[in-house]
Length: 244
Image 1: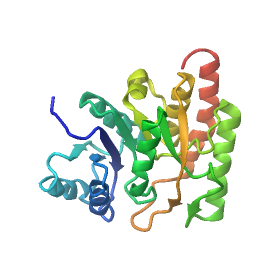
Image 2 (image 1 turned 90 degrees about the horizontal axis):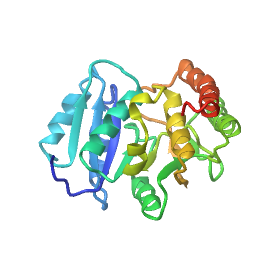
Image 3 (image 1 turned 120 degrees about the vertical axis):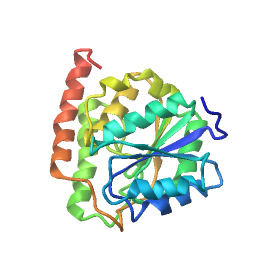
């Protein structure tokens, strides 16, 4: 077991993020509040992992890398990261995208929300109006009404149920059987929130501004939305029959 100075780890899954990865790492590690960073790279053919390895020489005690074979899904990447973070005794465990759609300067705000009593802090695009920049109107509407749909089906009072910018207290992730999380894509984010909600943890939304990526290629597609649409119904049914 290694001894780390920080209580906080930011998990960033990557696939072909060479345009963004060095900058996002430097910004996170340059914040006044000390964060560590764990990159989970799914065999990016563009050399993302090679860039991270080069930066590890500069940040040997703050930057970590797990390389996996091929694209295994967002959910499995985060679960891999969660297990690593728990094993290494981090108290606050963050999810964040590599493409600057999530502003690293909001990390201390999510941290503060958990310090002030939240078990899960969600960087929310929709708890204070609609705060999305550079998305086509159709995608904004799809995302917004997806969260309305999730609230209706699950009963969770969360305005941005599909958000992927979050801070968990370690105890939340320790209480969840991570090996039995069902979904790997877009619905993973919903399932994690719903599972925490069903276990009685306090979920707080922190308003953020979400800015669509400028560099690199989006990983979103219609099949990911389809998983979320039908996955929510499955989650509700599993909750009713006691499977969650």
